[in-house]
Image 1 (tube, one colour):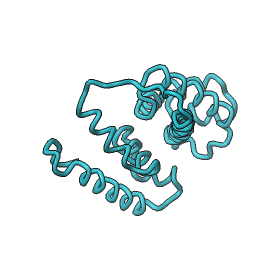
Image 2: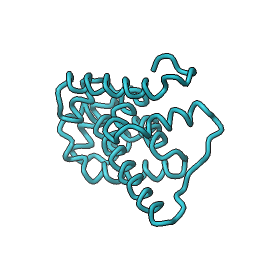
Image 3: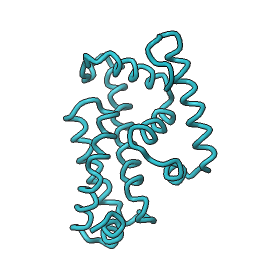
Image 4: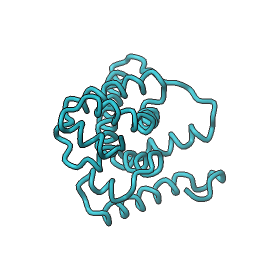
Length: 172
């Protein structure tokens, strides 16, 4: 069963087709979760919650061809909600869970991405971490493709300026 057929059947209420659809996109969803959550446990929890939310709302998916981007959007929304919750938790004087990476380049990239707004981070994650096409991002965000391109260009310019003078990354 291919992705579009699985999505069509899942929208009509076929539970096996829904499971097949989730299996098809499991890797992309986990990569998205890891990009936001930074550890395996939280990423798996995010995948479970995304699966539950998608199952409950699969009937609202209008275009089966956009099933992957629809699922990624659910994942991103969940992850952003969790990050907001964790920030509130940390601000209240409690320690927030975080894993420390030995990879300096990864830390620098995370630092650079943290300077971006949540919308800009989401754009970078979808385009470069997930390989979502500009036309699909435009469909998800309900904005013109030209707007996606200009926002992407502006965001990349901000990332470049963050790395200027560090001497390690010439081009982002």
